[in-house]
Length: 391
Image (cartoon, rainbow, N blue to C red; front, side):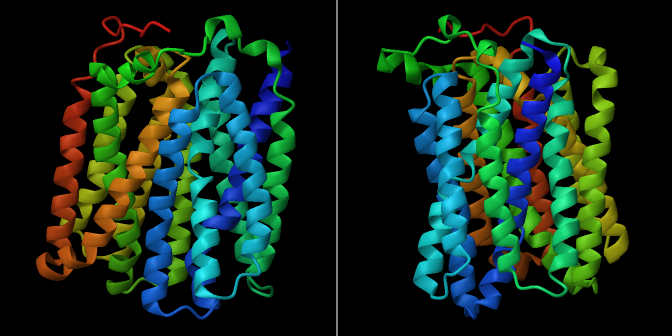
């Protein structure tokens, strides 16, 4: 198996699927407005998305038994996304949008965990840093958002849906370029006993890994929805927000390139997760003190972009040390689902919180929850202490 072929297939897979996702999910809210949905209908549609992602991750996480099944679940998801997004482009009624949004959300969350899991397994015997694979997902968003910005000046939103369909289909094709020799099935036995499949969630490392990820990244996900609301009230325009978001993604991309240069500092893979947590806490905590849109927006986005680079580079590697390769994808998928359900629940409470406590009070509560998540990281066993579960 050639290293260049492996890098090409994985990088292409990340780039294509993430572009497909960017052309779809970045414009959900705008599409609902374009279709004439009332504010109440828009709220229901937007709120249904994280719940459907949670449900999809939860079900597919338990269906996923080994890396071979992981890849096929990814392919099934890519097929559904390819077909579903074209139908979605022609939806006009509230109920058709609700049904298609739910279906697309159901199959949209798990593939990202699937890619991270089998990419980490594929490159384990190579010198390819995972962040050099993952950065193509970030690059995809930079490219898609820029192209979308240009196209939408003169074309309807359906153009983004058509492009999304094309790139989801291409990602499906690229999944068949993955070299089969990389995953050794004898090392990835299907767990036959039900109690063995579920015993992974009794492991101390898994419990605190999930808690830390959910309380940091899940809470930040809710903050991310309120962030533009606060910036708008401070006087920032939609174009200002778009530029701030681009700066965040570019910061993330740059640090995904830089992080592998300091890999010797991260032999304990909890360290980059701690760095991620600290940067996310700073990002949200700034909202307590800063009331200038540019200062708050750019600073917060830069800190969060750098923080996510550390998460994306080391999250799957840390979990692999705890659970082993065979159970990496299921646990990571269910963690992704729980992140989304907490974000959804906090989204339901967010407006009540900032209306009664003010935005400073809201950001203080969010930051406190993230600090709790950071504390959980320290309860994850160190690398030398972590015992990989028996397959």
